[in-house]
Image 1: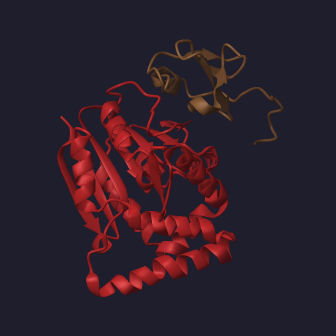
Image 2: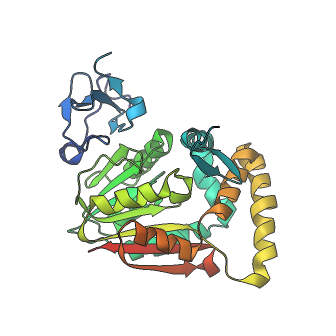
Image 3: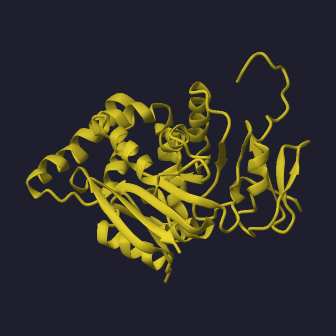
Length: 67
Length: 247
């Protein structure tokens, strides 16, 4: 996106957004994993990716935790 | 015998499980030229419809708006500029939504706008989270429209209002042949010339005609549990704003 920042790390996500997001399948809480840039739903066994600072809350795009 | 669930895809009927992928391909394909094409296809009138829609949403400084099918941000960003306290823009298509985010930055909108890729049939928000939920030109692309309306109601606070701007049934008989020619001859041709993608624009024209009319969509709002359901035609019913309240 911008050339001023060389950091390839996932972009910061709006913290207020993280507060209200829930798992779309279970409507249960999510745990933010800043290292991997993921939102983890333990109950659904899915980790939703954050790409370019935008959470992708689609089960078909999520990583399965048991895999 | 197979008894699979089906969904409309333009004038075709497809297995329900396939519609989302087909729609995604249409919007991945049209995303780069989406704004230009909207202007051409509606002769710029979509901007007026959207402004009327944002005024109808009427989200104030203490209210939170969820804008679904937010796409490139026309409705959600304008709502924020016109005073909505906080706006979450959501779309199932990441390509469209990142254009929306780029446009937000260009317009200096950082505070009070956020972006989430989500399926409107399975929203990643808790019950009673928003004061207003809006969806402009999105519902007809959804596979299970009743599920979307139920989700819209679920995430609304009591006293909150859902509004849908969508193509509807044109009510001016004398102009119907002209409207038909525009939809089925001019639009696909424009799509072919400008976006090199006549197929996608043919789908868009067909999906407009298979969408429920004013009365049917009102019934769907009521079935989803909304109260005080109403609609308002714009441009003779080419589009309509439907709304319902969560009481």
